[in-house]
Image 1 (cartoon, rainbow, N blue to C red):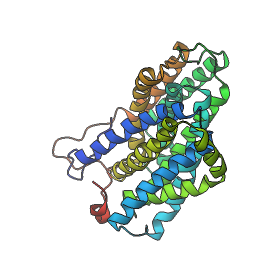
Image 2: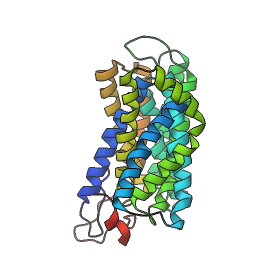
Image 3: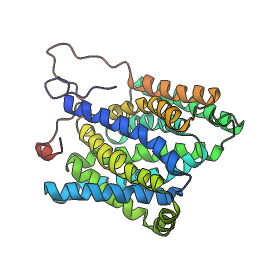
Amino acid sequence: MEQTTTTDGHVDRRALAAVGVTVLLWASAFVAIRSAAQYFSPGALALGRLLAGSAVLGVIWLARREGLPPRAAWPGILGSGVLWFGLYMVALNWGEHEVDAGTAAMLVTIGPVLIALLGGWLLKEGFPPRLMIGMAVSFAGAVVVGISMADGGGASASDGGGTSVLGVLLCLLAAVTYAAGVVCQKPALRHGSALQVTTFGCFVGTAACLPFAGQLVSQVAAAPLPATLNVVYLGVFPTALAFTTWAYALARTTAGKMGATSYVVPALVVLMSWVVLSEVPAWLTLAGGLLCLVGVAVSRGGGRRAPKGAAPASDTVVPPSSESTRPR
């Protein structure tokens, strides 16, 4: 996992801890989504999750009295809210109706490579040669996963059934919207706090998903209590908490390096889904997913360590003075 550093070159342990919380909770989200998917449609599940997250974030935001985000932060908040909190969640939920949790997590790991690419272009973070190699490897992995799905080989080992190419495409769409959302969010964090950017991004995503309100009401009435509690869990922990800890750490490093930390997620998801859902991806799907992970690792690896006593790397982001108001 990439280490985030302070301006004096030391490891920012709080940011590193925030990354750890994010990775663990996002891994659990893939399993919780898969479990709730049999009772909730993709849009209803996204709206329920966002409503729960918005409620928690709204209470914390009011309690901390951080005020409205500055005007300069709003373009990034709107972009991340629609793309990441809104479209990403619907696409991922729909994808997990078609593929198992581990496969979905592996496909979404293409997102970090896209983050590095978009960050290099739009955020001027550069284009390391390893990035292009990593993208090619990850794309090859996605192709292998797609072939395995087309051949009916992507089912979990527990049931031996087939899954659809549609699920692969939806998970890839989720990866693209995830990457675009992160790149939108990064500039917003130069002007607003992690709590402000996360809270109002969640509000925007909730508003975007309101057309699914009718489905949510009817499905909550029919779903068993554990399934509804799963939706609440998704809103409180993988959304309200994990998106805030993500934003806290993102404010302290580049988008590309931050995105690379999420390549840990699929390994955790495979383990969790095996324990909780008895789902293990078939060998060809697993091989393709591993290629995706290798590509991400290649694209973000190989950086030089600064000599002892040297000035910090140029891609280290110095937190603005308003950082003292951010949740710890």
